[in-house]
Image (cartoon, rainbow over all chains, first blue to last red):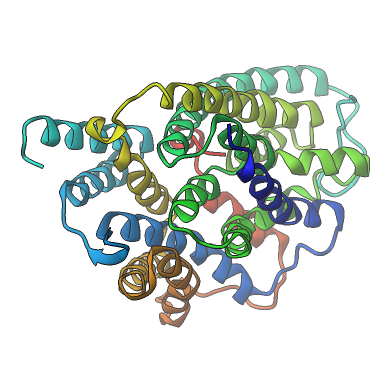
Amino acid sequence: MSVTLVALAVLMGAVTYPSRAVPLLTPGIERLPPGIRLYLRLVGPAVLAALAAANAMVGSEAGHPVFHVGIEWLAVAASVVLVAWRRNLFAGLLLGVVLTALARATGLA
Amino acid sequence: MSDGRSQADGNPAPAHGAGAGVAASRRRLWAESAGIAISSGGFGLVYGLAARNAGFSPVEAVAMSVFVFAGASQFAAVGLVTGGLAWPAIAFVTAVLNARHLLYSAALSPWLRAVPRRRRAMMAYVLTDESFALAIAHFQRLGYADERGYWIGAVASTYVPWNVMTVVGAVLGGQIADPNRLGLDVVFPAAMAGLAVGLISGRRELLAALSGAVLAVMVGLALGTAAGVVVGGLLGPAAGLALVPGPGAAVPAGGELRDQLLADAEEAALPPDEAGLP
């Protein structure tokens, strides 16, 4: 059983901890410049949207990236609509998975 | 462990009537924590499945939940490892993605000032969107910090269910012969998109997300998905920053005001019924 990525997990934990701990352990440091606060607020949606789009729209053929069109688009879009409407991420995931499984089971995708 | 009572302004906790108050508030905290625990466990299961689907061993999947304990970046790592991104770059993306914890930590700092430093260091380890949301609501109900209440929200509602269900997902994931046939390959992009939706509270966030997505695809087609994600994730916010704020959307000036920071942090935190990821 591979344990290679355990070291990556420790590294990721090490770079995450300071953002959790520094303001708690260093009173007064919580006064971040407003520009940085705003950037931090925007990084989350940008990184997550980038991950979703790249995963759903960029495939690979013979080791080269290619534009991918498939049921994943519809599944992710349906999931996003449901999450935005009902504010329920779990329901959105379930819808995406069920749509994809049904489309593949019926030969539509 | 003491109750760790301390007011946000550092004054002594009220001596009278606090017992009944803290009991009632903790009952409510437990009820809220139960809902979070179910949701958190569900997503821990999904993370375990996604990690196994991407080729992580059960030990590697669980190590992420134990050491990182930050759902969005754990899901992101699944995609970035699969995309072949170098570890330092993954660490950088993780740090940036989890930098929002600065806001939570800063907002809790004045409440927890009286807690011994070593325990504050431990509390920081389990600080997540959910533990912040539960703790700040509990503290505000009481008017002072209740350290035991913090641990209830952080450990019982999130850390334990997230890790236990990661184990279950990682073990179950290995038993599924063809995960894609069941649509499990969609879990990752759908989870990322859904989490992004949860963080969009205005035009700036929306523009940053759309820009990040477009850049990720364009750069991804040229240089690979991992490079696309890094470029989109780091440059996407520039579009949001460049947006001229509308009336009432001005950024507060001067790096001041803990109250504003608290408002930012509360805004960023998902309310209990929408949460699920640490």
